[in-house]
Image 1 (tube, one colour):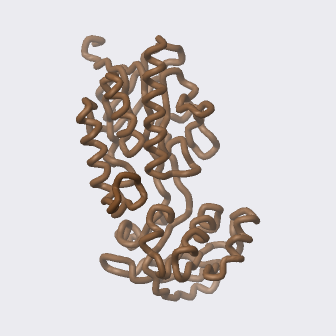
Image 2 (spheres, rainbow, N blue to C red; image 1 turned 30 degrees about the vertical axis):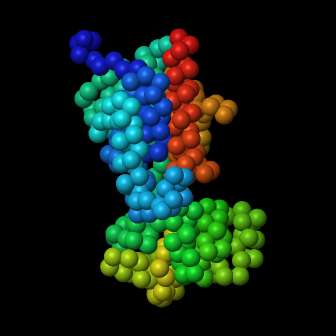
Image 3 (tube, rainbow, N blue to C red; image 1 turned 90 degrees about the vertical axis):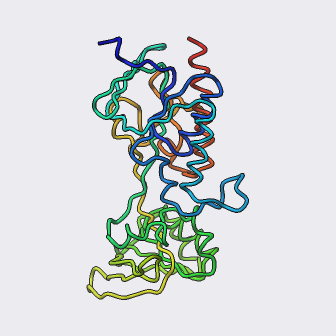
Length: 314
């Protein structure tokens, strides 16, 4: 049985900017990395139509195309990119131990080092109209897509710090920003609430929820509902920003890898090291502060360098 188990030096779980960058650096270090992409090859960026803020693309690019560029570069240096889902892990607790990983509930492989880059998923409301128009005016990242709505009217759904931060950011670019808060008060910190109230072109509607996003191929407006009076109103907007949080894709590692209370992997100091020797984490799976493609790529580089140094020390 042991003869049939594939043995690899460096396994990368998940694709996206962090995973592909880790693959580029690991391959150039001759670690012969194998990547399992997960079900969403390329990660969150493949749901973004335009990427305008990644260095090296002066005219901007399409999110899916950009991830294809990353993939080609990783493969050019010898990364074995495989479409598949890691379904179970058995990480060794000792230095130099072998980690056992199960893919698609059937194939077992052994890895000397593992880089986790499974990312995080933006939370959405789940409305049919919202899901249909993701990339057509519905977004979960104001810093990624806000520029495209310069001088236009948009809404932000949410009442926490993230929503307040995204709304005040958008207010610098847009003509008017309307926040929809489903309760009679915001959950955001007092400092963020003050920032919202001091922003002239930002209006907050309390006890208000998004009922539907209007438009066929692009956002043309929204229908909102007051959850106290049940009165429905239509607003003419071109952008809908959902800011109700993100969920790190870490369920697979719960009880094994140290995480914070919201499920983000904890890494040691300025490194990508986890509590398990030879297991590293990069990208949005361990970063709840920035969540940008360029910062994810940076930690992907770090993870590959950390893995290379770990293997060299054995």
